[in-house]
Length: 561
Image 1 (cartoon, rainbow, N blue to C red):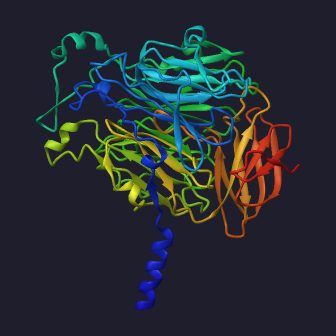
Image 2 (image 1 turned 90 degrees about the vertical axis):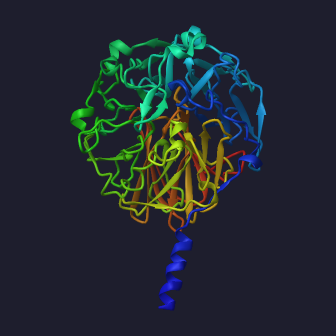
Image 3 (image 1 turned 30 degrees about the horizontal axis):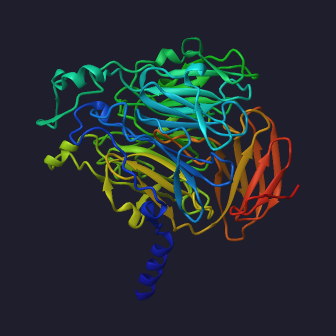
């Protein structure tokens, strides 16, 4: 009996992840502002996002943090912040021309002009902003001349190459039609709604007009609004929140999934030809099985991520929803159709009492399969007045993958014990130690930077360098084979909720540490294969120009072939 107990304890210790809150030590305690404490209007509930990206091309991850505002300070809020990574797990705020003081919501990252430096697109309540990186440590606002400003209540955005012409296009979700100006003059114009039989809360989105998502086509560094001609307008007037581009049906072009709040989700199948011309998007969410949950019910989608959660080589979907609903795990059947396996995967009961925001598929423990992280927090502070509706502040959740697409909620260490109203979530290896860390934004509170101290395995990090304007190789698929097992990942920074993730891919490896093969399928269909690689290194693959292997902490790669 004693031996059995000791063995069990041993297993528990090895399985226990450990995320440590390093927000203060990293210099990232600046509060995220989202209206007033009572959350009188829907604008105050969405929160804001962030981006991990290397803005200065020095090899490590910098951080862009979006901030909201208050009604009293509308147009003159605290402003967004760009933090330069100084190494050693420390960031310093830098003034670079991206400190917009409007009501910020989300952010997307992509080198839209193909100059080798990553640009920023900030979604706002009101005009959105495209910041061009001018390669000297500063950015310039080019929104108007690029025709991408809009005047909506925007949420998530994504850069991706839908027409296979080598440059990055842009999709923007818009939430609801909402006019703040009359309410600033007379807040009593909007009566409260009733929740849980007695709580007076803000109204919406039901009863409001849905926003109109936008698709902008990149034509050699300038953008054209192709929302109508591309077909995406057919699913407009939903309450758009999260978006993820991915080739869900394996036909070589990028499709789009949009998580909608209290309206059916949308899956846009890309029906372009093999060359990417004559592209038409068709909403197939109903027939694909992702418009509703498995019971045929509309849910309140917020965040979404795509990843090979069951290890069969195609991209599954995970969507976060309102409390009283479960988060939903849609298994890809291999042909672009899906089935709701939330209950079978172990993700129903642990999520039904939480309200989910950002979400990430990521291999936190480096064991070779994708685990899940979900940020949680209610939208109504008033729920703290009753015992029937959960709590406003909620703990975030970590789910460990058994290796077969079955997940178990686990203690994530001290960094996951705090209860806040969390929203945007991004992942990235900010400390360059070979495992993925997390950054979470919290309503009316400081963010949370979680350093991953619990990874147990070896790793190979993969960074792509495209030959054309798509310098990060967004949309490329990478397959890594070791020990006869193949892992599949897609290069895609846009997923989760309101944010952008590290575009380097992190693969967990067995103890022997050798990689048999890495295969890259580029967006144009070209294939690069590299055999026999060491572990615990960064592999930089240059399209049509060889590769390099380096230590993550080195500044210059060592050319191998």
